[in-house]
Length: 452
Image (tube, rainbow, N blue to C red):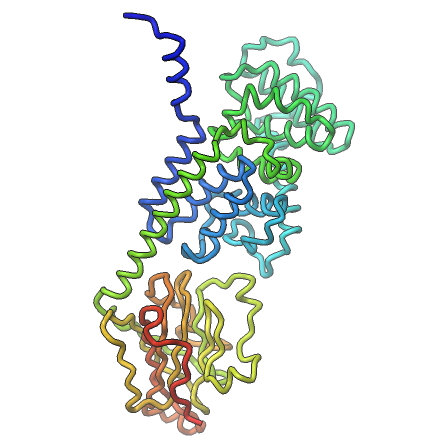
């Protein structure tokens, strides 16, 4: 067999995919196969690789897909660090509060803190995470590891625990001591050697270097250990949660280490864009060509003469939106936002029995025969919808089976015989028919009939 020529060797090397390129291709395939409600995790996988290169415009493009309406609003985190990592990167890149703190993984909270507070909390959490001793027994207080076999994994464990114990003291002198020790630690490890803390050593080293004027140390670390950033689970998310690292990341400090060219990024994003287009087209076809869904029924109390149709989980922005604050809302019989609506009811309404269905593709039935009140409105469905009264009702929070997408919704009130208790209280009861049509079918919003 003839030996490979230098020319052939170079060609083989140049055409071999980098670990980051392989992972990017894998995430792209996952997006093509994923259900609409399961897109957040693989899209986050694309985002974190693009963001790691420091390409802010392309990273922002992925975020717009994730949070701008092309996919259902995420209800589950991609991983425990995904939302904090996005927040930290966006803060460093000055992109604005993209996530609004959602989706969220952690203890229950009644209010979503401002992004600056979330980023600070994530930094504290991640620093504690990488400096907390995960091994049994008390952390070593001396450098006894120096007298032990350097080939023994236990020696490396003891060495790392010693560094953690120093770093967590938090003083400038202690952190500089830890930085010097980490520089020696990373220098002594070979390119393929196993890290005892799954790359947290590199994450802590980078944070300390960028905060204590050690930037000159970083190129040697990345030249030897850059593969860890892509190959170790959660390591990119971990480094991104450090504002000190996220800041230099947005300036392209890790572009060469990640090893993704602009051409590779463009090809991958074009594939993702095309996959999302196909999913949206399929959702539109399913909406307009499928048979009518089974009618879903709910009973909702009508406090303050209104019924709310809204996502099962409200974002911070949605919680801040208040219905019927404009004079024109009462005249229109509805108070409309992009993803939620309050429908005004006829006066003196006790409750409504709601019937919900998704219409077929045929011409909409816009008959107003027997209808007391009717409105049509556009609505973007990003996650399961619920019908709620202002202050609660018997069927509140039971989700409706309406697929994500944008619809024109027809709301019609039909009179019903009220029970004795309602009649004695001077209240009426109505059937509220809510029919979801394809976007644009009703030329919404329209106020078609008001009882007044």
